[in-house]
Length: 368
Image (cartoon, rainbow, N blue to C red; front, top):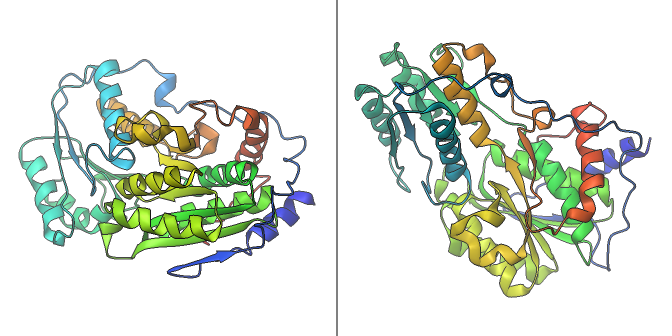
């Protein structure tokens, strides 16, 4: 009953569009709810690929079409690179080629990148980000002998495209629990890069987790750009501006899902002496945001590295059936980081929530 009530409250937090806040809070530390009682230990089952010896991928040539931000974004794209690097170390992966996306580029630029990689014989070709969905619908049928994968999108009706999708809302729920427990005045913030259904999954899970842990918490939320304007993932200045507004409103823990714009969020948080939660990669350990590591208390780990690694292994084995349908908390496809030791005191609490999600005791919403 306690959990049901907490989740009902979580559902009350609504996105106001361009920005807004939900809930009360702001009057000292949160009055915290007890974590889920009696939940068994959170499962840590490996994916099917990780249960088998690594295959030999030395003859494979893998092409990667990056999302905006590319290598060095300390987030989404760098997580995919980590998967490639692990495949090189474990499987002897042969040649790889990376192509960058440009801010504000026309749609056909994505098609051009995918075609270039396929024509040059790279197989498989991995498209990093849902922005490639329409391009793949056109390009993949032109190269039926080439295997394609896309991160964060389901492309139906194209048999040579494998989706690599995640339960972002589940990992973000855990980030919300962290924020509620670490906020000194029960007032937190969410900064989204682009207002799309994908990023709204992060917002929905974050708000649900915060409300489950502290029903009266106040939550600021704002997006850097509307749907269709992908510059929100590569605008640190705007990230800083929006985060500063949330901090001035009283938020003292901010979670971002804004790609390279998160650097600006971290900068604003550090300047205010507040705390931040990273996304996708373990941002505490990312060199490109190392100057902000002292304020990064955790990151929501979206294991894009695991998905890329599993997919490459599956292609090497010629058995795509081993790729999980969704990377969720049950297989540690989404989870939380503890680097820096700033949330060590919350591990038992977080694992109780994590187990309750994995076992179906908590259903996390994927829409604000």
